[in-house]
Image 1 (cartoon, rainbow, N blue to C red):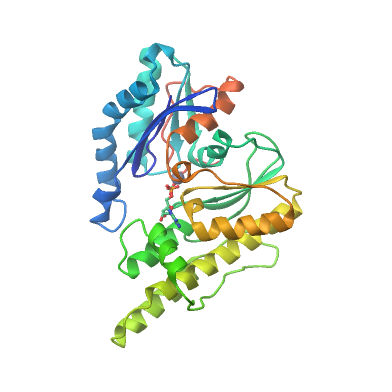
Image 2 (image 1 turned 90 degrees about the vertical axis):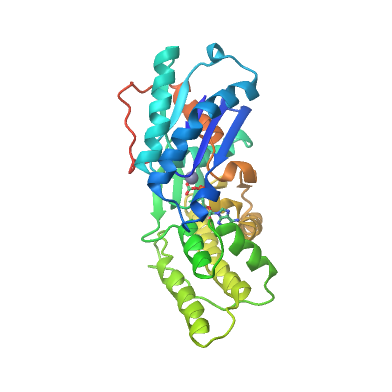
Length: 328
Ligand code: KG4
Ligand code: ZN
């Protein structure tokens, strides 16, 4: 059984042998946070407390198993919002203690990456592009569980930039899916800048792009003109995708990767999926992407990553602490 409560989704899942999803119950708090235009940490942790008990029950019932059938309890240890993480960590520890089962703390990003293992066979070395609301990272993996971050965002995460740009255009939280939809509908784009950084760098930067979008939006408003949301969305999305695709494919070539793996909430982006698929075909390297339901936060991906540790019998003690800044 795995528990995920790092941000604004409470999720409990039961996975067999790290591969077969018996249940993956997700309760999203999006509607609650929409009122505030983003996640309010205090509200998020309270919501996790309200949901966790019935969700544990539902996950067990849906899987058709008894608590005595479980072999380990996995939980997201970090990174994330500390008040949210604490709810899952405490629930996981209580279950592990009461059922006398091993406890396995999991890194949230390892979870996003290993969401792919629920549906694909991973081949190493591989390059993982993790793009979510809190992360934008390029990771080189020589083998299972071996994560080497070769590039990361220097400011906003890709998903964060999507959410901020959407908010400026009056779109609801989370903005990613709305910007994605508008970008698909646009007939032309308002060209936006691209932050390539140093020639050999795998790092990213999205705050300049975000400011460029805000400028265009504000100028339209000041002139009393209608904001061209679809054209701006397309310009923004093309800029994000160009940089992600270029840097990810350069890493695939440099490290001789056998696969490119896409993970995190922004992996749900239609434009990004299709452009990466095209590029991977040119490179002759398979692109692995999880199904949409496993892109955004869920506990099945945590169970999948936990299975690596289960294999090596790497367990945690009941002293396990929620780590908001946990390193991969
Ligand atoms: O992985 P996730 O569920 O939570 C974090 O760990 O951050 O990712 C959520 C992020 C949000 O910023 C959301 O706007 C973005 O993923 N997202 C998208 C799309 N669907 C979700 N961004 C772009 N296009 C999408 N279709
Ligand atoms: Zn996530």
